[in-house]
Amino acid sequence: MYRYVGNISDLSHDIIKNYVLNKDVAIDATLGNGYDTDFLSEFFSKVYSFDIQEEPCIKYKEKNIENVEVINDSHHLFNTYINTKVDCIIYNLGFLPGGDKNITTNHITSLESIKLGLELLNSGGMMVICIYRGHNEGKIEETCILQYLKELPKNKYGVMVQSYLNRQDISPMMVIVEKK
Image (cartoon, rainbow, N blue to C red; front, side, top):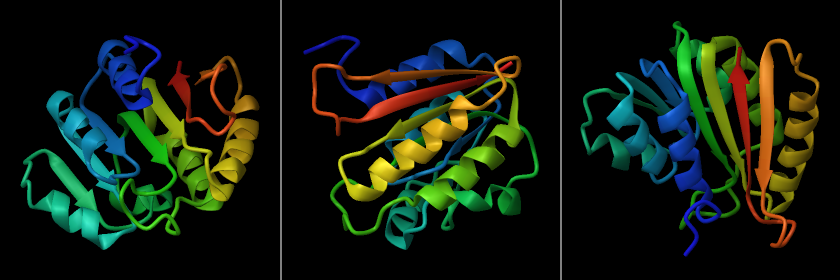
């Protein structure tokens, strides 16, 4: 088992835990099975967690975690629900593990969400985007998101990509955006 080059979700959590200084408000843009929301709820005062699928939202709400607000809606609607700056946003794009693989995140709404998220992000805040590109929509998301992030002004944002070199091209990749 690898300590660093193992699970991309564990790595994203380590980055957030160690490099996001202010831990007031966070967004889990893709609730799914709730692992990122669980993690964020341990470190942040308030967590907004989005998912378009009702079942994961209902299931997570049953945990009744006081500092988590579960929102059964698309992440491209951040501004409808959040009217404050945030310190961290995490995405796991793709489909719900163990769920219907035909229901995936969409490049149009994911990109719109990322753009809105960057506006909501505090100075010193961080956005972590895990892109699962083992399906058609995931490949489209990878292309459009990387193209957009590549054009961000370097005097305002630092953008880094982490991906596996000795695995298939469809293995997940992680993009970190840090706001100056």
